[in-house]
Image 1 (cartoon, rainbow, N blue to C red):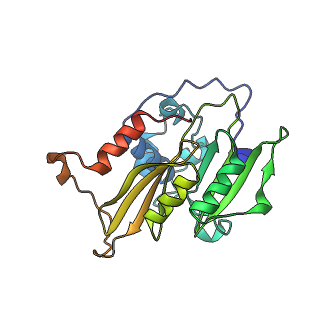
Image 2: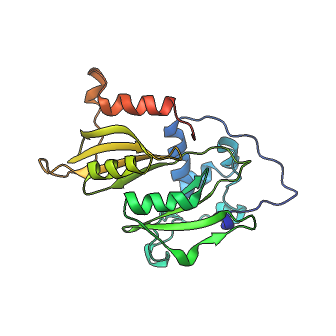
Length: 243
């Protein structure tokens, strides 16, 4: 994945640094970028590229934007049949400070993943520039974070059979429990852990006392005292670091 990163033209102007934007605005812009309707495309013909808002250089080419028949009612996402086996349309990439090899072992021992050894790619300095772990029907991609790169924690949600068993294994491997197993929504129970590299994992296990339902928004808790699920996350995020 890192090897496939687009390199911009040397003569292109330098992008401005990223700025904070509301989550709903970010979602609307990404949706418009990936699923451009005629109205959306027309509105953005003279708009600045996504980099204006997010510090990146992504934009649609001029010939696509100017074609009134391009992508109308369609998506820019690739269909599943054309995606490599084990990958989904969206896949996570994690940068590890302090040893991607040990992270792979952690995931294999605690979660039950399996490294795809055939794609392991070392960099010239001996670190990993690309590796993949198969987790059920999903792929978790990763690499060693270079010394000069910033700390960028990942937030990973995974469905498990028994969250407490995972927490126990994780603690034995050096992880910290963020949220004990707690009742949650939509027929699931929730737990969280922070692994030794500062990534936070959301563990969802089926609540056998309840029927699994389709996810939907519920803000009835706004008028109640904050729950353990809420307060433990707020505390973890406020003190998050790579150490």
